[in-house]
Length: 208
Ligand SMILES: [Fe+2]
Image (cartoon, rainbow, N blue to C red):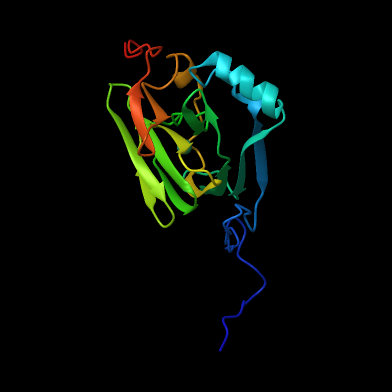
């Protein structure tokens, strides 16, 4: 027998369950919001400003760099935000396409990413100088614990699509990256596919 709905809906304050199935296109069933980041929105995140300008000239400022669709119902301490991120492939001066990245405002809040398409890296670092780069290919999940600054990087030539889930009260601090001159490591193309290099523009004195 098929599962059926019983009753007239949950009691006040109880959220209706929802199927949030996603496809490799990054479309999220049950989405409550979305946002797009265009190439012009990403000024300053790539190390090579001249290469970034050339990409702008070639692709235009409205080129879609990444799209996020999300489901958020409720905002209390136990609520979750679930969504999809679709990050389109690009190389800018040897650096792979990336999201802006952030630290959660409530820094102890963790996040889970699950890769459903493409080939990527979750680049992470702490305020105390640790850094990690974990590959994400289709079927891989990456746990981003609290206190790790994180950014997705597309190291392939197809869209990188991930499903993410994190506490709704986490918040996003983007300035922690821009104020430090970027993350401490760059993800760049090499003969094998990708590697990380120290970011010469990074200011490692942000712990204080
Ligand atoms: Fe996050």
